[in-house]
Amino acid sequence: MSMHGAPLAPRSCLNRGTRSPTSDTEVNAMRAAAWHRHGVAALPVADITDDWLRQAITNEANRRWGRRNGEIHHGR
Image (cartoon, rainbow, N blue to C red; front, side):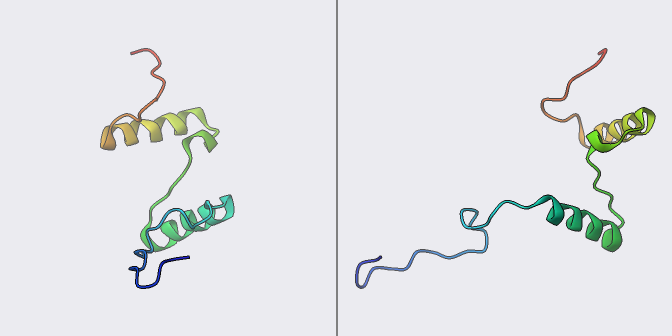
């Protein structure tokens, strides 16, 4: 409830307080759309079961964008 004559609260589509968290189904739909529309594959590294492939993808991501915060370093 607002006072008579008081300005309205600002409205924005960026208001994070009113939207529910994104579900796993919605995230997977966004990943599929990114792949089909833009050729971008968004893969959770932990979901890749092949050790060699997972490490190759991790190495390429580290080369392009740097190591992740909180990443466990093995060896070096």
